[in-house]
Image 1 (cartoon, helix red, strand yellow):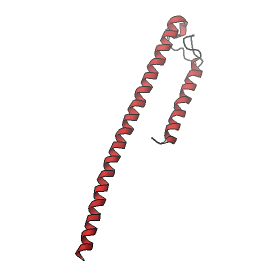
Image 2 (tube, one colour):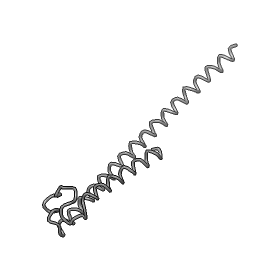
Image 3 (tube, helix red, strand yellow):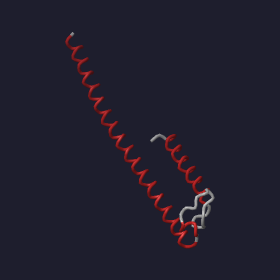
Length: 107
């Protein structure tokens, strides 16, 4: 992945996390600032609210890690595909060079 694309992806993820955390207020402390209550347990706050908030954060963090792993795997497969394509094209170049050499020797 190019450096520019990687930095843009990081910036986007950071911005999304900041925006969501700004709307949530303090996790587990009751309803967030975004207008949504976040569910009865979270709205009530207290230990259960904090626990639910922590579990939700963990869930989304794991989900993000899975998505990044899938993206890395996809790019690795693309790299392998392009390497094989380069090898195939190099064989074609060599074949054509051989034909040119043969034509030169036939003269």
